[in-house]
Picture 1 (tube, chains in turn cyan, purple):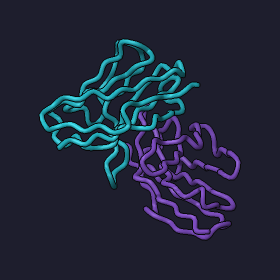
Picture 2 (cartoon, helix red, strand yellow; picture 1 turned 45 degrees about the vertical axis):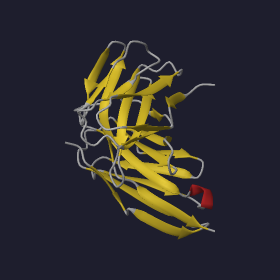
Picture 3 (cartoon, helix red, strand yellow; picture 1 turned 135 degrees about the vertical axis):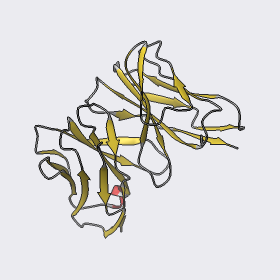
Picture 4 (cartoon, one colour; picture 1 turned 90 degrees about the horizontal axis):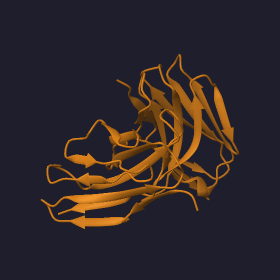
Length: 112
Length: 112
């Protein structure tokens, strides 16, 4: 069963704690992306990776970190430096850059 | 910097009506433009991808067009059904880059 999985679906954390969101894919896609979605706003790119062991900052990378140690996995850590972490986080993949992007089901993070 | 606008923000139509959703972008130097569907609380589902060299793409009752010179794309939905109710998002690549820039979406409601 091919696809993109994000876990957990809902995540709750206390302010000041770091939290890591999981994104796994078995589509054999090279490129992976993390987006953030807030009510009334379009999706905004946090980080993206076009190849293992390499990644680039997107438009809103401050307060976030990523790693790409395996082709299948692209975890996102939301650090305590992120001022407004509560949001819906979406992971996406594509065969390569500038190709069709496919999205996972998302993780809703609530920080109180 | 690429900016993507979708008008209207919300649209309500009776079942069976043909409808058009609009998307405009500011930078015509795009690699591609992609249309997505998002159901409440879910990830994005890719509907259609139009490469910069193409004028339109069709999938079932959906037809998407691209006019780079005017910076516009339209998504045509034929014979709308209540199951088409969702938010439709348009995304265009940022000039010279494979990164996608998203509009805020059009929330479509099809009434039985």
